[in-house]
Image: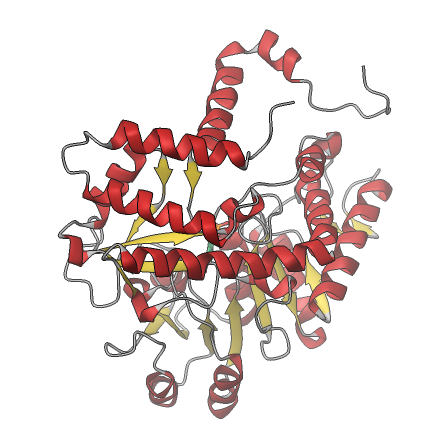
Length: 422
Ligand SMILES: *Cc1c(COP(=O)(O)O)cnc(C)c1O
C-alpha cells in the first residue's frame, strides 16, 4: 500500500489488534473535529510531525548526545538530532540548543538543575497572577526544594510590576530570576529583566513555553538575546510534538546538557526529537510567519468580541495568542463557564484572574487561545462568531441552548476542518 519503504502507523492494524484503544483514538479525533478548541496551550500538529512521532525512532536507546552516546547504532538518530539542533539555533539565533527535554516541566527542572541548588532563592511570577507550577508551587519540585520569592501584576494595570520585580530582586538577591508565564496575555520586557538580573548578579531564565511559537514566527520580540537560558514546550503555538527544548548562551551549554542528561533524564525520545526537527523546519517557513501574525490578530479579535459580550479582557486585551477573561460581570465562576461551554462543544479552561476573590478551583475567569483555530484557517470574522457563541454558552444556565450552540459550532468548524476527512 505504501509507495515508500516507511514502516509506520497502520490504523487498520491497530483497530484489528486493539479495538478498545482504536475507539479512543477515533473518538478523540471526532472531538477535535466537531468542536472549537480554544485551550491556549494546544494546537494541531501536521501530518509530517505525526509521521515522525509514529516512527520506529521510538525504539532507539540513545543516552548521551550526537557522537557521544552510551549505546551503539546511533548514527542515524544522531543525524536527526544534529539537524534539529542546527534548525533551532538558526531559527532562534541561539548559541546552543538541547532538544531532549521530555516536556516543558522537564526543561525547567533541568534549568534549575544547571544553575541552582536546593535551598537557593529563585524569583518567579506568582501562580495566581499567571506563573506556572514549576515557578514555585508548593506541590511542585520548585516550591518544595527552592526558596521562591514571587512577583505579580499591578492591580490597576494588570501588567507585570517591574518596580516590584526590581525591589524584590535587591531585597532577596535571588540566584535565578524567571520571566515567563502561562496566563499572561501581554508582551514581557526582557531587557528590563536582563538589567535587574545584572544588578543582582542572577541568572535570567525565560520560560517561553507559551509564546515561543510567536517568536519563531517573528510576530513578537525574542527573549534569546537577553536570557542566559530559554526553556519552552514544543507543542503549544510552535505546533510541534509534545515535548520541551532549551536554548542557552555558549558559556552555559555544557551545564545545560549535563543537567538534561544524566542529571534529570535517561534516554531521549528520538521519535520526538525527530518530530521537533520537523516542526522547527515548518516554523521557519514564510507561511508559519503568516500563521503567527494571524494567531495574534485572532486573539485580539476574540478578546474584543468577548468584551462586547460583557466579559472583560484582563489588562484590556492581548498582544499574544491568548486572552484572560474576567467573567464576573456575567455572575458566573470560571468552573461553571467551562462546563457550560463544554456542553456546547466549546473547549476552553477556567482560570484565576489577578487578585481573584474566588478559590482556584472555581476562578473568576476563563482563558482562551487561538493557536488551534488559526491552524484550522479561521480569521477575525470567525472570531466574532466564536465570541457570540461563547457568550451564549456562558449565559446558558439551564443548558437549554447548548444543543443549538453546538450545532452552530459544528457548522463553523466544518467550514475550516481540522484534520480533514480523507
Ligand atoms: C505549559 C507550560 C510549561 C510546562 O509544559 P509541560 O510540557 O506541560 O510540562 C512550563 N512553563 C510554562 C510557562 C507553561 O506554560
